[in-house]
Amino acid sequence: MLSMKRIIVVFCLLFASVYSDQDPFYLGSTLYAPYMTSPTEPLYSLVMQREFNIAVAENEMKFSGVHGGGQTIYDFSRADAIATLAMQNGMKMRGHTLVWHHAIPSWLSQGNYTSVQLAQILVDHITTVIQHYSQKYPGLILAWDVVNEAYNVERGYLNEQAALIAAGKDPTDPANIKSPRTIWSKIGQFDAAGNPISTWDPLRDYVRLAFRTARAADPNVKLFYNDYSNEGISTGSTGNYNFVKGLVGEGVPIDGVGMQYHLLLNKPTDVNNYSQSTLLSNLQRYAALGLDIHITELDVRIPTSDATGFIPTTPDLLAAQTQVFANVAATCAQTPACKALLCWGFTYAHSWIPASFAFFGAATPFDQNYVPTPGYLALQKGLLLRKKCCF
Ligand code: G3I
Image 1 (spheres, rainbow, N blue to C red):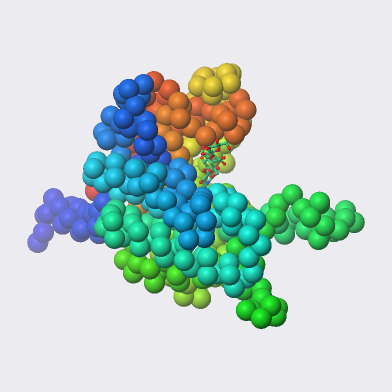
Image 2 (cartoon, rainbow, N blue to C red):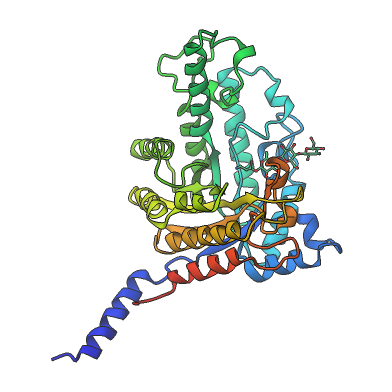
C-alpha cells in the first residue's frame, strides 16, 4: 500500500516530467548595436547580457535594412553587427522581418513591378536572407517573422474601401485611399502574359509563397506569422486567429505565431482589457492549432507628464501597468506553447513609444536609468510559474 507521501512524490515527478522544460524559455529585447559599446550607455550591454538570452533587430534586418540598394544589392553589415553581438553573448535571435508593408526601399516601391516580378523578388529576398544567416551564423536564428501584419493591413484596406463606398466616394481613386494594400498583395493577380488570375487572393497568395519559400530555404528554422491586436479575444483578434487557422489548415508551413503585445493603458481600469482569462483563452486557441507562440514586441504604454516619456502621470497607472506585466507573464508561463517573450526596447531611454505617441511612454521593463520597474519584477515573478512543479 503506497503511503500518501509516496503518492504525492510520484504525482510531482509525473507532473514535473510533463511540464519540465523540453525547450529553454527565451526572454529578450530589441538590441541596438551602437549602444552595446557606447561609453554613454555603460549599463545597456550589462542589462542585455545579465537579463536576456534572445535579441531582435528593431530595424536592421528588415527589407530596407539588408536589401535597400537595389534588386541585386544586399548589405548585411548593420544587421550582422547585431548578430555577431548576440552570438558573442550566447544569445539566440528572432529574425524580423522578411515580408512587411513597411521598410520597403524606394527601388522596390517605385519599381512598378508586375505580379510575377514581385513574386521573384520576394522569393530571392527570403532565400538570400535566410540562407545568409543559416550559413554565417548557424543556429543563431530561433525563428523568422516570415510575414508581419498581413491580416491587419488587408483589414485596414478593406475597412477603408467599405467606408468610401458608404460615403459615396470613389474607392479606386488613389486620392481617397489612406490605407493602401501592401505592395506584396499584387502577387498572384496576373500571369506572366499579364492575364488576370481568377483565383487571386490578395491577402493569402503572397503569404503562402513567403512561407513555402522560407521552408525551402531552411528546413530547420521556426517560421512565424507576426501581428498586433491579436493578443486578447475580440472581433479583430478572432479574425486574425481564423486567418492563421485557415493557412495552417491548408498545410502552409507555419510553426508559430508572434503576438506583438503593444499594449495601452489610457487609465488604470484599462487593466481589465488584459485580464489573465482573456489573454490565456487567446494563447490556448493558437496552441490548440499546434503552433508555438512568441510574445514578440511587448511594451505597455501609459500617459506621461513629460515629452521624454519617462514620468508616468500617476502612481495608479504604474500599478496598473505592473498588473498587466504580471498577467502577460503568468499566462505565457501557464501555456507550454509560449516559448519566448521579447520587449520592443527594454529601457525608457530607447523606446519607439514617445516619438510615436506624444505624452505616452514609461512602456518598458527598465526605466531611463536602467533600474528595473515594478513591471519587470512582476514579469519575472510571473515567468517563475513555468518552473513551479506541483503547487
Ligand atoms: O535610418 C533612417 C535614417 O537614416 C533617416 O535619417 C531617418 C529619417 O528618415 O529614418 C531612419 O529610418 C527610420 C528607422 O525607424 C530607424 O530609426 C525609419 O524612417 C522609421 O520608419 C523606422 O521606424 C521603425 C518602424 O518599425 C518602421 O520600420 C521603428 O523604429 C520600429 O520601432 C518599428 O517597429 C515596428 C515593428 O517592426 C513591427 N511591429 C510594430 C513596431 C512599431 O511600429
